[in-house]
Amino acid sequence: MLQVLSMLYLWLKAGHVIFVIFWMAGLFMLPRYFVYHQESPEGSAEAAIWVDRERKLLKIILWPSLTLVWLFGLALAVSGGWFTQGWLHAKLGFVLILSAYHIWLAGYARGLAQGRRKLTGRQLRLLNEVPGVTAALIVILVIIKPF
Image 1: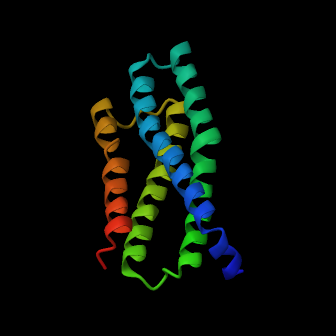
Image 2 (image 1 turned 90 degrees about the vertical axis):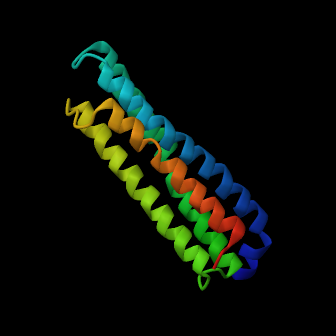
Image 3 (image 1 turned 180 degrees about the vertical axis):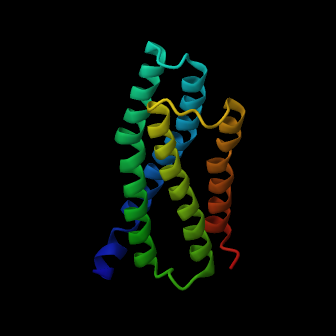
């Protein structure tokens, strides 16, 4: 099995990067959708359109990308024999944070669809920085491998 993964390394890497890009795009888009959703009148046709957009983004892009990022990433870690390296442990910690953020966003979308608007537009705009900062830290860990 390890030999097969080693032969497929570049394909695994390409798949991982492709779906990280899709996932990150969705993680940047969804909070922005929430801002627009919350600025629309509650119960309006516009709010219903945002509910549909949020649902589609989660269903078509975010959930499949999250799944494939993890599958390709774990396959890469196995093929590279990286599970003993500290940088991978730190990277996995940040990916867990992004995964938890993704799950929180999905829950917030469900709440918005039911009319619960717990955060302000400003708070949502600030939350939109989470994936960017986390992704930057992950890239540094993967490229520099500081430990």
